[in-house]
Amino acid sequence: MKPLLMLASLFFASMTLQANESVNPQITDATDPQAKGLAIAKEMKARNTGWGDSEAKMTMILRDKSGNETDRKVRVKSLEVEGDGDKSLSIFDEPRDVEGTAFLTYSHIEGNDDQWLFLPALKRVKRISSSNKSGPWMGSEFAYEDLSSFEVEKYDYKFLREDELDGRKMYVVESYPTYENSGYSKTNTWIDQEHFRVHRIEFFDTKGDALKTMNVSDFKLYLDKYWRGHKQVMTNHQTGKSTVVKWSEYEFNTGLDESDFNKSSLKRAR
View 1: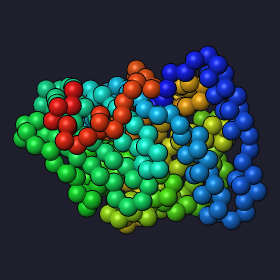
View 2 (view 1 turned 60 degrees about the horizontal axis):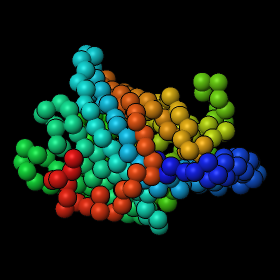
View 3 (view 1 turned 45 degrees about the vertical axis):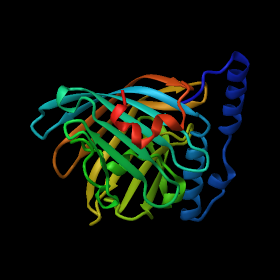
View 4 (view 1 turned 135 degrees about the vertical axis):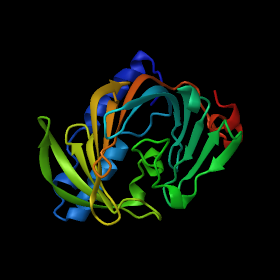
């Protein structure tokens, strides 16, 4: 999610990317699993920093265990915040029963995130309690906490192993949430060694049992620097349900600012 740059800036960004993609010695030389896991997480975050703001469209397909589907159309706006987590606003356009619903997230580097949901039928803004972050988001297999931006400081890490997925060399890193009221005891994440993109996440519930798996594919490069996976499939192993998310029409540096993510204007989100 980022800015439209002039040709010279694009050339500089591409050169920066090549430099950034050199092997990080903190990763290759690390012998301690915790230190190596943390170094991989920091590199992953660094590769996705500096994009500014973005807008995109999302089709969300909800599938029950019998295979029945429900489609939802959503517009998503995002803002990178210096010194804190990102802000995001999701606006539902279809179907009619969720039209006008708006969801706002203020992610934070430390502590609980702030989230609000505007329900047009009730004409009021509902604050999402921190104790409810593990609940399903808009009937999908994504939890409220899945909608927050990734912040390195909110987890402890452990490097598990190197692996291969779809022909690509991967790092597999185990992460443990350090914030309160998470619905997960841990996650295992597959991160490719070339671009540090997330390809798969396995989620484990608070009892340590396998809960969900998210697979990410159809990656596209924006501004010669920032990768976005255009397809995410979240499968719930305990319920048999799944949610497919398809992204399109990414735009960067569209001029969004803090005023576009004000909770008092949720009712007017369009």
